[in-house]
Image (cartoon, rainbow, N blue to C red; front, side, top):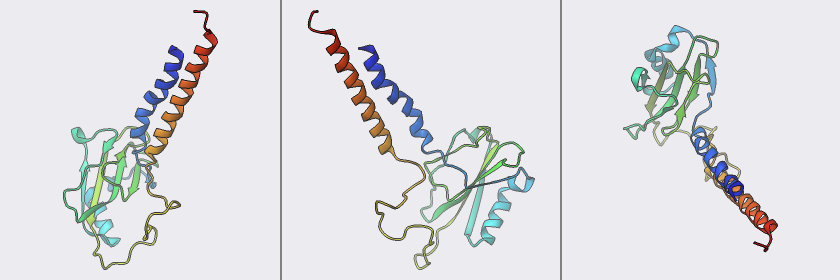
Length: 181
């Protein structure tokens, strides 16, 4: 009986941290540990050269920095995050670059030794602008990729499967005991 309960409860307990892991973003690229990549003003200038409007970059460090770091909601609806840089160490992959990160997701350097994070936001483009071709412009259909964050549906399916296996094991263990008790 205890074995069957363990089969049901253990997978669910193991999946709880995995739900948070689904929301940890994967870097889009890497840059070495050069001093100019540690300056939020350099990032703002570069992003404005790339065509973003009214870029504001902030550096999160010290007591404000957690690992993993939860990207906060922006107070202004007319702004969006355009870049995040997570710095750790001084190697060839010291700076992890995240393009268009979203609030509510987590950032964590692969080494789990964040020294600082730079978050850059910019004003959203006018509605009259042409949409970016890399993003779906029509309704979401079954074949569209919605997000890089995984799906909580998989968690539910896995948990349901574990419960079915546990119930089956419980049934079989009770059946083997027979009616001679």
